[in-house]
Length: 54
Image 1 (cartoon, rainbow, N blue to C red):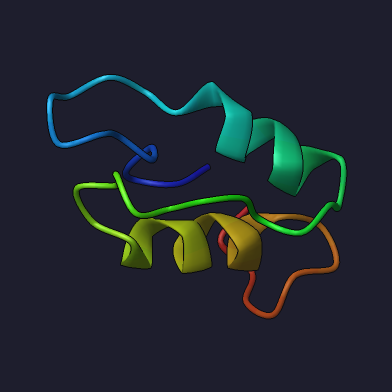
Image 2 (cartoon, rainbow, N blue to C red):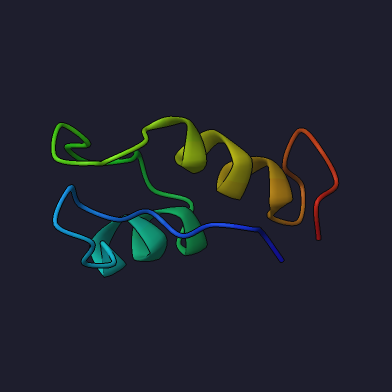
């Protein structure tokens, strides 16, 4: 589990990026993210990720 989800500047959840991480695909365009660092936290929290925030 992570504290935040990837959201656009207008507050919408970017489900496409969550699917990319879940399916171990390269992360797509993140230029509209309000906070791009949240994607690193999510990737680190996935099984096999470089972290352990599960």
